[in-house]
Length: 230
Image (cartoon, rainbow, N blue to C red; front, side, top):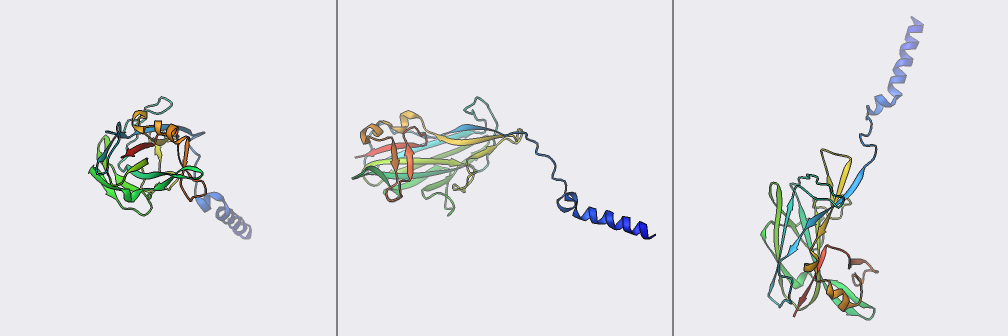
């Protein structure tokens, strides 16, 4: 009887300290490795082929299909019921060290004809919008009314999370292929970007003024466009 109690005690002790008892069977990771790819998120600027004037309107539009075309040639279907856009305007200013950028929110008045304004404190400091969901599309039609002359750089962010500062804000998962991860990147056509202003400025990088050199935009980026306001 004594021996039986000892054996039962040992078995009970082993059960309590074993990993299976403590945490449960977590199973094996179904992915031996993860693959990463980029997907362009189209954003258009309708009338950015001429100089603007004060009180003019910059019209923009974005239609994003659930079926994407990745940089590596894949066509994943990635439905997103909540797609967000951030529009951040900067004014180009000339200082002794060269051209830099200042925030220019007060120089514009934002409006939206399709989509919704967002006022989440965890979003970016620009104008924030939620796309209108019409499955299988997400649609957004924002505009900026100009209030002051100058040369501006307008930077666009698109994410499937309202937390733009999160590392995962631009990450899209394929539920049918969970080992594949896609990074969404805003893509504006080169003709709308007005890249010739880089040559005028004599640089390929623009930094935020009084920020210890924080880079806002590079010439090769696709998520910005210049606007000249006379």
